Image (cartoon, rainbow, N blue to C red):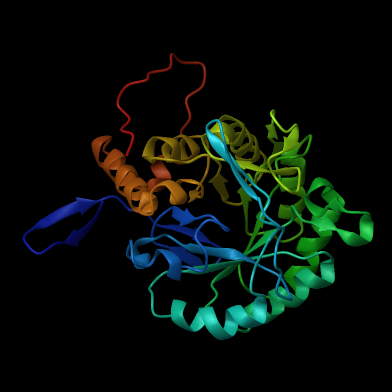
Length: 327
């Protein structure tokens, strides 16, 4: 174990670091894009410097107003959102948000998206030269307007082309965020890995809907939206496990992580880190509670480092439900 000093004595602390390309991260607990704003919104509740990384709200070339309300609906064990990628645009982010973020000792990961591959490239190039952005998360769940609205991330060749083109315009580490709305997510992951991705994050939301039975109308103005929260965790966990076996690059687990036990499940099946999303709406300090829960687990199980836990799933043995705290 590594050693660190507190004010009164020395104590052993597990090594929680991980590396993505040339970026060293202090711990595996990150915020999920779209659930933490641009960081300022949560800064009154927690020390942003304790986060492994801060993934900001998705950025497009131009500002977007998003979809009309109602665009968020609670569901059983989760929520549906059809916010519509509302954001201030990349130029406003660089001018107004990034200077404030630079005061914190936390890697800033910018989530980027576009309706064309050129959009992705232009936004990525601007962020790559901005200073203060440490990595890009390329959201390929977006519709390609030049291909009739088919999401980039549903086709291995299209997904690969986005990554290939973005890789040419920036030296920043590239994390590719995968959609679960596909038949074979491992095939998409292998495709983006071969095209230059440094890591993959998954899953994005599952497409769902909800209906008001009295009016017989959809509860979302957009009719359908993205399902997140505890309801999707088993699906996300299965997909992370499949992808972690299929690629050599780090896998970032997302989907229904509400406490440390949830996060530990993702790490055990092969995730190198996790992103916390819907839980932030319920508990603004969820990330810190999860981080502390992971550290406590490593200590209780005498694990020297995070790497000793990642991918340690034991198959073919009896399952024990004891010994894991909820965090």
